[in-house]
Length: 90
Image (cartoon, rainbow, N blue to C red; front, side):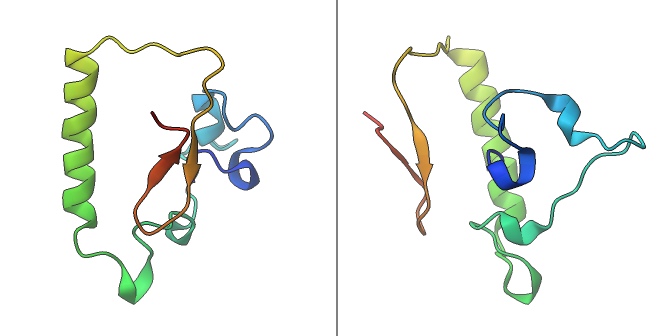
């Protein structure tokens, strides 16, 4: 859902945090079923909360410990499957 053109528009790959805010000033909410890995409703993933907590910890550690940079011309795009992987990943 984070880069879905149907949700965020043609410029979905650009970082524009203001698009997450409605005209009334509240946060824009999208239905959970659009985020495939965890599903929603009665069949939602029981480990979703733990997975998000772990994701936060990993992201914080990576940002704190490493210097990240964009490599020009290297295209990496999400590939939808049960196990999320990236296409063109070295």
